[in-house]
Image (tube, rainbow, N blue to C red; front, side, top):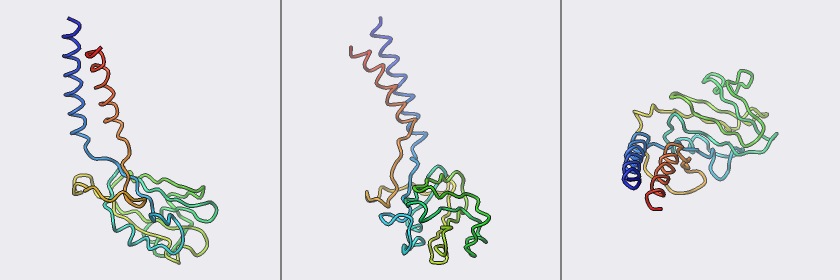
Length: 169
């Protein structure tokens, strides 16, 4: 009787886990701003940013040392003028992660000295998750998007292991 219950439990977990994986097939991605160069001077951030499609839930990782640079999210007007006083987000501690929480346009600049006027800035457009084409796997390099472990997939896998272990032992 205990073996029968284990089989049913195992089947329920497999079906729920498979459904969770299908419903949540998209992975959040983390983009290393500037690739190998990180967040520094003399990098073409416009060309770098245009390589990717960004979705809500993705994040940007700015690799830099403090106090050499800062990360500021600004408005379109402040982006054009390299104006730092009205930043929507500001961090200068080094190695900043910025979460792209909603669709829309984002503008980023460095607020140190004349770095912004030296093109240490870029803009991205975060698409709605329904309008984006499925991502194709790209090369595994520091400037490519890296998958983040999806908690639902991890939980589904762990839930799969528990009844499987009770069934086998």
